[in-house]
Length: 116
Length: 116
Image (cartoon, rainbow over all chains, first blue to last red; front, top):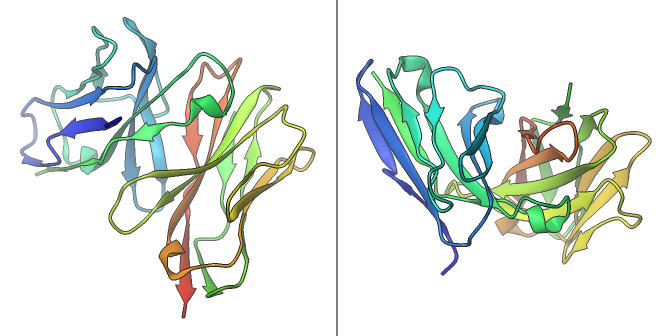
């Protein structure tokens, strides 16, 4: 089954404790992206990656890191989480080379993160 | 700067009637794609419809159609014959093809309530 998986689905942590949220897709997609969703703000892009070893900042990259060492995986790293990073996080992937409906993004189930 | 505006935080529609959800966008890139996603209360993001900036025809997918008015920079979603299962949050999104580096931005969303 074609899918994007994220782990963990729920996480409660404390300020300053490094964490990683994993994201994996099995559709051989070039493009992967991380978003955070906050009430009233919609989804805001954190980082995206056009292919292996190619990443770029979205609109809200501060406090986050990413890496793309393999095509299928795109982990999101919070080196020192703070309470303002409490949010619902989505990973997404798509084919990324042309501007067509082929670019439909497939989303993971989301990770709800609480930073105390 | 690229921007997506959804001016309707919430809307009600009677079952079996049509409803239009508004979306306006701002971009200076001639190549872009517009997307609509549905987020039910369960939280997953479901792709509905796509419109490319060079597409001559308005996109349609079953009961969903996109009223694309390029000069007005609007991309309204029309849902025909509303069903109770259409009650959800709806997001308009845009990805720029040339200058935006495939960055994607979302609007704040419109919550649709379908009444029986």
